[in-house]
Amino acid sequence: MRTPSTLEDLIESLRCLPGVGPKSAQRMAYHLLQRDQPGARRLGNALGLALERIRHCEKCNSFAEEPVCGLCRSPRRDVTLLCVVETPGDLLMMEQAQCHQGLYFVLMGSLSPLDGVGPKDIHLDRLIRRAADGTVREVILATNFTVEGEATAHYIGELLRAKGLKVTRIARGLPVGGELEHVDSGTLAQAVVERREV
Image 1: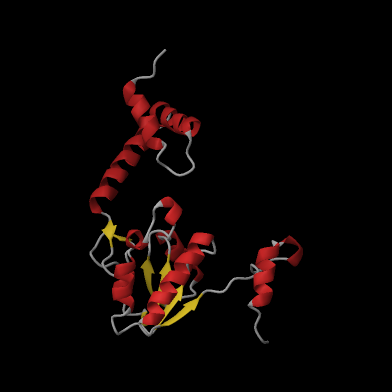
Image 2: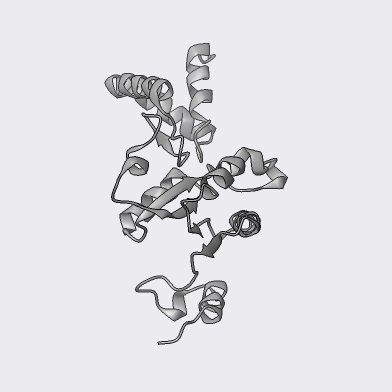
């Protein structure tokens, strides 16, 4: 029996999601059509509405419905501190941790020459303009501690230091509540290297 082409298109469309292979996409499609048609309609409407209304904030490059997001418009934020993160999810984590009171810039990725991702793909020109606007005094690089994240932080650091800006990098180390015997050797070694006086 041949699968209807509309169903094949739905299954193939669901495969664009990260971590969703052919079997998972097929299960999702069957579930939505067989068990949750109202959910499928809601999903379709929400996707359509998001594509129509969501844009990038003109200042921080995160997702927003307005030209400038609420976070960038907030008078409570320290405009002299700019934290650079890779994704909107990273921004959300920083906000949940309540560890940064300044503003943000979201790269929407990291440098990855092997994947064809260069400086233009992560909006470095916009970041440089934003950081060098005369208001920012310190740029905090909070990219991930992956090869790509480290390369991105190094590249951005070099560019911003050349503009006379203070550039810092978030520290690495042991997780809060972590036990030494359960931590990987790379994290432990980095924690020792980045130790501080008490």
